[in-house]
Length: 169
Image 1 (cartoon, rainbow, N blue to C red):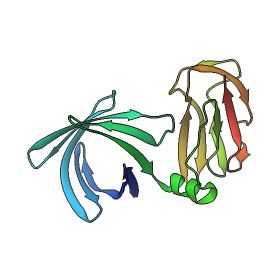
Image 2 (cartoon, rainbow, N blue to C red):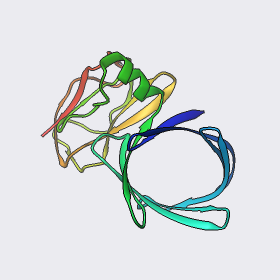
Image 3 (cartoon, rainbow, N blue to C red):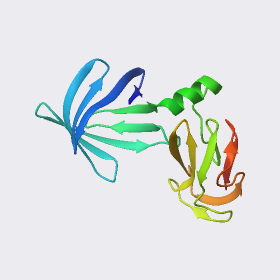
Image 4 (cartoon, helix red, strand yellow):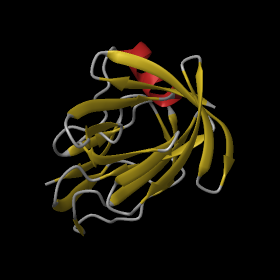
């Protein structure tokens, strides 16, 4: 499966060709790399390629597909452009899935799981709903610390694109 990654103004097509534990053969655009990739729970990745070591820290932004990557000397804005992002961009012309306090569906689908209830306190990054769309399940996380004030859907509900799902205060 191939995804696109926007790194500042450059868009690269990235595909994992082979994987054995942390050893990967990846294709970036038309070039193939053999890398040793390790990462820890804090979002820090160590990449070994042709005897050189690279360390990158990925910090998630408010949208679950946006990150800031920090290297030793620079930082970069990164966007993961997968099938869901392309669909959303084509339908609405926007990549905004989550406002400051409302989580909306990027595309039609089905609610798989809602692990929270009205009144629950959530922390930024807690999973609040899981949606199945285009043969993929996506977890949507709280963009803020707060309290669940409205849940507009139930587990098993069929949803439309841009439908409000959960509001957090």
